[in-house]
Amino acid sequence: MICFFDTNILVYTVDSSEPIRRERALECLSGAVQHHTVVISTQVLQEFYSITTRKLRPPLSASQANHQVEQLCGFEVLGATKHTVLSATVLAQAHQLSWWDALILEAALRAQADVLYTEDGQHGRQFGKLRVVNPFLE
Image (cartoon, rainbow, N blue to C red; front, side, top):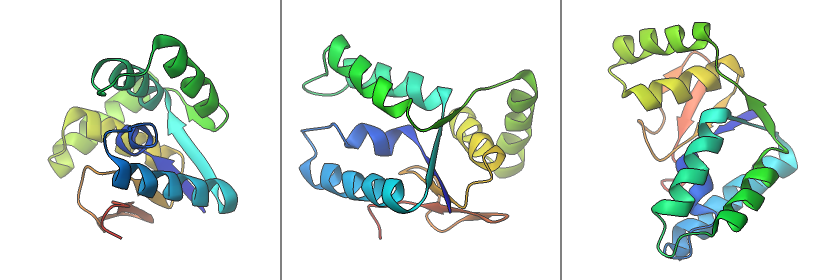
């Protein structure tokens, strides 16, 4: 099974201000690492660094965030092209998604993921074989 992780789930893995969500996010990621293929996108890496160094309280230092990004780069990482951006615009319009959520969905679909772990979106929604899962609701 291929599991695609949205930024918000990965941010919770390092968010000390949210201990319950942190524990659940770590369980979800650990389970996926042990039993499945984990995929993320360059967008996820960029957002992760920005959020963890600017929005977390307390924020990670640049060095800590860099180390975390290096660890995340151990997963399969998909980049964006002009074609993927255009595909995301179609998804955004067709499914009334925010731009950033459409980019995440497009990457998960391109990865041929079975599961998209995210706190955003509608838990249980299907896009072909891709199922949206909010791990905090399961």
